[in-house]
Structures are given as structure tokens and as C-alpha cells.
Length: 188
Image 1 (cartoon, helix red, strand yellow):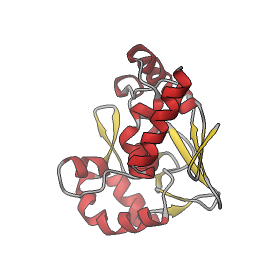
Image 2 (spheres, one colour):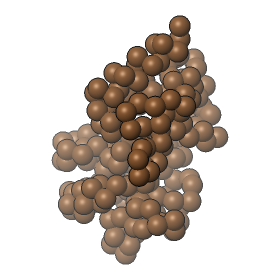
Image 3 (cartoon, rainbow, N blue to C red):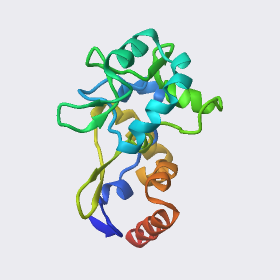
Image 4 (spheres, helix red, strand yellow):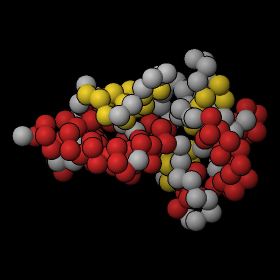
């Protein structure tokens, strides 16, 4: 672990390799697990605002879940998160054949909205836990991502480079530049 500003960062994000391999995992992170995607308070407001624009991109099951539960929910641990369909799929998930995709991101890709998706999804496999004085930035190892780890090793792409855009979105350009310096120093 090392400190960057008000973050405590796991060295795993520098030392582990990762590149999403949707052809292998089929987007399992959007349909497996026992909770929705973590959200910030600001993101709950964004979801409420953009829901009418993304609704046409969603499945009927997702729309039903959102209209029954809301665009976001308080999870069992009290955290804010996306609603689920029957305690399984994220309500915002859509499918391209057997591959799970994000309906929010599809609306973004088509220029309908200017918000890509929850930052927790964008950051994955990095998870950020906010504390009073700092944020913990950790690598989340999940066996469904084994193909992504293998592809990352093959392509020699460390986690922090794979999620560069998301890290900059979350922490800013300066923070990311400092992270790159730490990565270079660790290689020496």
C-alpha cells in the first residue's frame, strides 16, 4: 500500500495485469454477485435525471425493476447501488446475444446522454471505499475475471493502465500522473 494525496492505494493495481475479455466472461460482472453497482449520492441524482433518456435502451425486466424499486436503491449494507432484477442482473443490463452490456453506456455511446455509467462500473476491477479521512483504492480479484487477468498478462497491461480513463474521472489528471510516477519508481 502507498499513499497518494487522500488515497491509500493497493500495489496490486500497479502489479497485476487486466484487460476485460467480454468474449470469455460475457459481462458476468453485470449479472453475477449479490448487490448492484455502488453509487455515489451525486450519481443517484444523475440516474433519476437521465432515466427517461436511457429507458428505451433497457429490457422490459429492467424497466419493471426500476419502476418498482427506483433508479437506485439502498443496499442491504446501507450503501447506494443500482437496483437488481430478481436479486441477480443489474436493472440497467442489456444483452447482445449472450453478452451482458450496460444500457446506460449504450445511450452514452449513441450520444443520447453525456454520462458514461457509474464510476464504480467504469473503474472495475478497482473498488474505492471512502472513509472519513481518505479513500482506499483496491484491486478486486474475482474468479469470473480470470480471462481478463490472462489477457492482461498476455498484452502486458497493468490494471491502472486498463482503467486510466476511469481513474482520471474519479481522481483527476494530477492524481493519475502521480500514480504513473509511483509505477515507474516501482519498476526500477
